[in-house]
Image (cartoon, rainbow, N blue to C red; front, side, top):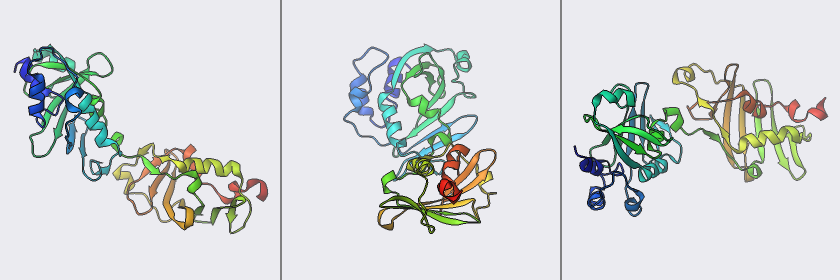
Length: 305
């Protein structure tokens, strides 16, 4: 395949979906790289899915009403990030025609990452992504079955290098601090609530004022509680959640439920956490969990000593 044909085929990596626009733009140009944003700004395309296969794992990112990765909820910006990466990508110079260089550049079939992008009923665009070629956003790339290796510039390869857990949504719970009005704690051996009134925070049912030094970090964590990782399915299936170490129920203005969380302490990772009614098990650090999983005596320590 000639350089001109390959440039037409690569284009902005959506050539099979907007081929007429790519062809109109590429014909008449002689350089080996171009600014894809010049032709993509006013074109509409919607990616259905992206599949990245490597020796370690296969990542299946699928679009729809909600983006998913290998069946799990993906980060909300997954689709937008992928489409923007396609808009920003650059096909640079050809650096090799010799297949003996494929392994050294990481684009051989054994070590390269196979990228497939699907849009509608079109055949997928398939690339073999290799090692970094120089700058942080430059990588070697070739098409399957072809010897020519090119430099690809842009953030697409960084996205393709993400693992399954990197694409998953790590947000466990989020609420504006001012919206939280009541937090109910249920432990195997005690139950109480932390409630906001006109005077501040108090413990229920005792009515004792709460210690702001303990309440503040608790609210801070609940403003945006994010996981550090996810429990493997083999681990999740063995966890006993009845009863959990603590069941947390957060209520907002007018008694509106903001969410319920279940926590299990683990000496190695900190805490396992899941939303009530969900099977997804997150992990958080001991530092984070210890600021949320607090006892009544800790919240009113100075008054209850």
